[in-house]
Image: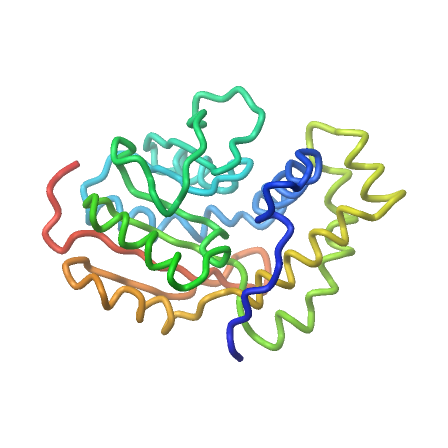
Amino acid sequence: MARAHLFEFNDQPWLPDALRDALRAYLRKVSDDLAVEDTIVPPVRDALRGSGADCIVDLASGAGGPMLSVARKLNVRILLTDLFPPHVRSPDFYWKPVNALDVPPELTGLRTLVNGFHHFRPDAARRILDCAVRNGQPVAIFELSRRSALTILTSPLIVPIVLLTMFRVRPVRWEWLLLTYLIPVIPLLIFWDGLVSHCRAYTIPELLAMTAEFPAYRWEAGETRLTKAPATVTWLTGWPASPSRQ
C-alpha cells in the first residue's frame, strides 16, 4: 500500500488552541491507558547506553505523551519541545518553538519523536535524521500508526474510543465535553487525523532506506507489540558508531 500524505488538522497553524489541546490530551490519555511507555523503554535504554547520552530531548511533544514516564522509569533528564508549545507551566517544557527539522544545537541529548515522524514527507523526514547526524546526536523514533489495510479499515473504531476517553481526561474542560458529546467536532477531528496518520506511516524498509544515507551511525529498527492492546509500535534508533561520551 503506497504512502499517502493527506491533510491532517493537527499540522495546521490555524487550528484553534482548544482543539489542538484536546487532541494532545486525548493522545496522552490513550498512551497512558495502553502503557505505551513500557514498549518504548527498552529501545530508548539501548540508545542511551549505546550513545552515552544522559538526557532526552523529545521533539513534537504535544502534551508530553509517554516520554515523561519513560524518562522517570530510566531516571534520566528530559526536555520536551514542540513547534506549538502548549500553554502549560512545566520545567520539563522548552518554552521556545522548536522545529524538528532544525533543532537548536545547544539542545543536546537523545532526540526522541513519538507518533510524530509520519507528519513529515520523506524529504523532511530525512532532514530530521540529517540534523541529528550533523550535530552528532542519537535519535529514537516511535510510531503507533501503521500503514496497512487492517488499520485503515478499523479506523472508524477511533470514534467510540474517543467517546469512552474524553470524559476521563483531566483536568476536565467543559468546552472539550461540549465539542465531544453535544457537537461531535473532537471525535470527527481525531478520527480523520488518526486515519490519515495510518496512511502516512512509514514501514521499516522505508525507515531503513532513509538511514542508508548516514553510514557513520549504527541503526536498528523493529516492531514491538503493546502489552495492553493488539497493536505494535514501530521504532527506529540510531547513534554514532563510535560515539563520543555526552
